Every structure is written in structure tokens, then in C-alpha cells.
Image (cartoon, rainbow, N blue to C red; front, side, top):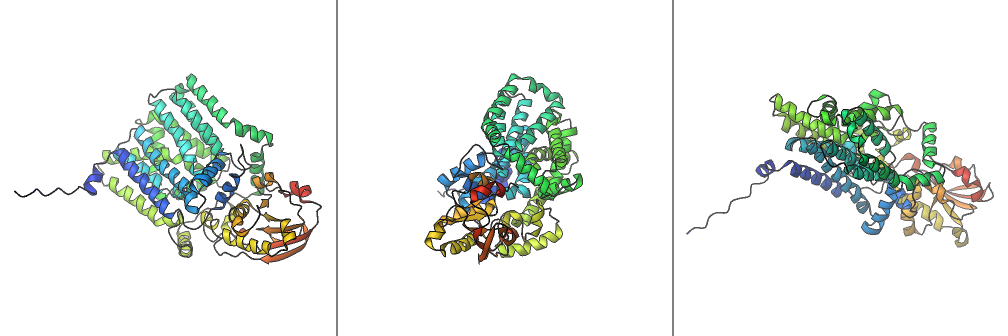
Length: 525
């Protein structure tokens, strides 16, 4: 008797069609994770990453320019994952993947079906800002998790969930504040959204106040640190505002940058999503999210916040917009929209992928970027970034080890007795972090700097009689030293211009001891 021929597995087309909404979301999230992992080791450490690893060696309840959570995570990375470019970038890759999943989950809790859940997750995975954040170990990649975690809990509470969920929201909000102070903006916006809608009733629960108290207690250590250090973050923000470093965008320009940064084609989803939250009957219970979205954008425009500050709020607009697209296509009999829109969004993301993650060699990327910049006018986050040859997320990721090696050659050329008392002073926290990270390999001591938290860490006992200056213009060095000698050069064509400064050996200071002028060297901005 002839054996029956085994049936071939139905893959991939028919099996994909059988996936549930959550399974589709997981596939999209896993695909995003894959893209980040295969590019995680390209180029080099971002300047902020080097600084955070330095902060991890000085664990505290606060820092001049950020709350403590990022330093704690950096400490974990150093001791568990390692400090290679790949190891450090695994963390943001996982956070980015989780944000994609969370977006799909919000769509599901709002009542979206398979298509809506998948489209919402896809928009999140294809948003340019989110893709870029997923490659950088910074506080920004954690923001959407804390913000949208709170949004999801509000949706669950409105849908009849246990009021004890306010405790989880308080924990998330407190941790979000320990990640980045911008959590307060979203919390205020969400509270305003609730107050402007009938769902304000959920605020009457005692569990809401218990959650608020829990958030305060989680944030309290950092609050006390700021009090004890005379509010350095506010001083930092004031310095930045006075310096005019950040471009000021009007309402139209601000919204325009949102459309570009979030991938122009996803605007076909998040703009209808905002309107659907505000005006549709289907989502009227969740109208507070629409008010929160609009309130947050308005708040950031009024306060002249950077354009990417609004990025963490978009997943809930993607979720509502995906439901709006699904409803529109079904009511109008336009079924072709369902395959066409995801295909277009995916294609646009692939076309712009090199600008967000390092898929190209850096020399080839430079040519790609010049061509793309002629098509899309990108708005830099800081005025000095106009001078950079490539985007800041890349230009501040190259040249650090070459700079450290040039500094080490100058340092090691000194006589042993002079070398022992020579300090390496860096002009910014990125250069200082690079010296701290790469320096041991070349025999360099820890750097000192007046920038950000390095100023709090002080001059490390150096007198300043002999110093090597890195990333500092010669004119600035001559204000403090009578003898300034160029002993090395840094000239990476793709690095940020302010890092391409000569390495300076400085003697004969015009001050008595470095500690006496240390307050003058404070550079918070």
C-alpha cells in the first residue's frame, strides 16, 4: 500500500492570513527588533552613551541634565551586557520593540481588530524618530514606554478595569520622572484630558490619589537631590534658553517637523487618529486621549520645546488612527486601502532607513544624505547642528577613539613626573566620556570637564599647572594659559565640527590652582 504524501505546510501567505491581531503585532515588533540588532554594532558609541557610562561610575540620585534611571541602566549594561557598541544598543533595541508591541495593545484595547492592531504597530515600527531612537542608548527611547504605559492603564480603567490600576500608573509615572522630566508634560496633558471629559469621574477614586502619592514617593529621591544641589536642571534649561541654542518653531513649522520625523505617510493614520479620538462616537469614551494629544502639542509649541519632545505621544494616535482607517475602508467599500496603506508606509520607511539606523557604510551614507536633504528639508534640533556634515545621531558617533588616541600620544610624550600631574580637560561631556571610555586602553587618566555633571565631579585633585585640552578652541585656552602648544590634530570628516579641534598642551597657567577657578569653568548648557 502506497504511503500518503505528507501535506506541505501552508506558509507563508495563507498562514499569515490566519494570524490573530496580537500575533501580527508580535511579528512586526520582532521584525523591528531584528533590524535594530543587525545594525546595533555599526559606527560607534553616541556621545551621550559615553557620558551615561561615565555617570554609571558615579551613581547618584540625580545629575545636572537628567534623572538617575539612565545611569542605573548604564551600570547594568556595563556589568551584565558589556560596553561594546552592540551590547549598549541592545537595550534601546528591546525598548523600541516593546513600544511597537504596546502600540498594538492600545489599539486592541480601544476596540481595534486584526488590521487596526497591525497597522498601529506598523506605523510605530516605521516612524523615523522611533527607528532612530531604537539605535541610541538615551532616555528618549524609554519615554514612549512610560507615557503609553500610563495611557494604556487609563484606557483599561475607563473600560471598567479595577481602580487599583492607578497604583501601577503611579509607579510608571514615578519611574518615568526618574527617566526624564518630560513625563510631567504628559501627566499634565493626560490629567487635563480627563478633566475636560465625562471620564473625570475616575479621578474621584481613592486609588487615584494613592497612585499620585506613589508617583511622588518614587520621584522623591531625585527631587531631594535637586533641592540639595540648588536645582541644577533649571539652571541648565535657563542657560540653554538664554544662549538661543535651540531653534524656535512656530505652530505650523512645529507640526510640519512632526509629519517629517514620524514618517510623512504615517500622518495618514495619526492625524485621523487624533480627530477620531476627539469627534467619533465609537471612541468617545477615550476622548481624553485626544485632548491630551492636542494639549501636549500646544504646550510644547508654547514652551518652545524641541520637535522630538512630542514623539512619545504618537502611539495612541496611531492606535486610534488605525481604527479610523479600518472603519473608513469598510464603510466606503474601499478594501484596497488595507493592503495599500501598510505597503506604502513600509516602502517609505525602507527608503529612509539609512537616515535612522546605520545600514550603509558611513562614506556611502554621506552621499545618500546629501541627496535626501535636497528632497526633504530637515530641521536641526540645535542651531550648531547645521554645520554637521551628516545627522547628529551619526556625526556624534564617529571619531571618538581617534581623538582619544591623539590625546594619548600627547600625554605619553611627556616626562613621567610631569605626566603624573597632567590633567586631561575636555570641552564637552561627549569628549570627556570618550576619554573615560577609551582612555584606559591608551594609558590615559580620567578626564575632567566643566560641562554638565563633570563639573560636579570636580578637578579630581589636579592643580592645573599642566593640562591637555580636548575639543576646546585655541582662543579659549589662551585666556587661561601663557603657553599653549598644538600637540595633535583631530580631523574626522564626518564628526561634529566642534570635536575637530587641535589637541592642546597648556602650561604656565594664569591662575593659582585649578580648584580656585573651578566655579568659573562651570558650563551647563
